[in-house]
Amino acid sequence: MTRTELLKQVWNLQYEPGTNVVDVAVQRLRRKIDDGHAPALLQTVRGLGYAISVTP
Image 1 (spheres, rainbow, N blue to C red):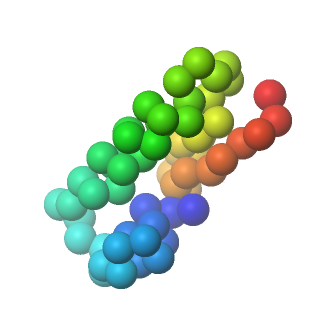
Image 2: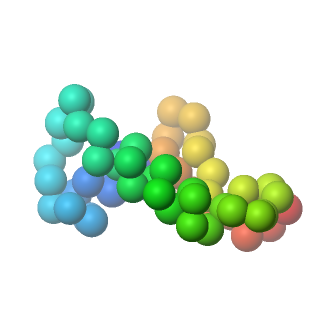
Image 3: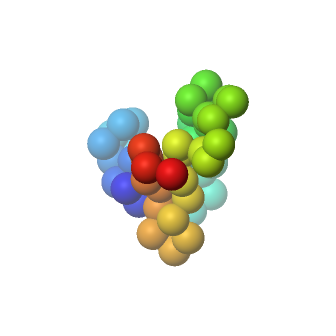
């Protein structure tokens, strides 16, 4: 899911280049769901957005 899609679907916001809402939310999610998991469940897909991966 892209950063723009997350802003629209979760916060009902249009894309604003200066906002870090998505970054903060992803950081908090990583602390909650990735703590103790290797490899991490929440993946950053460079140039595309974020994905949840359940396969190693």
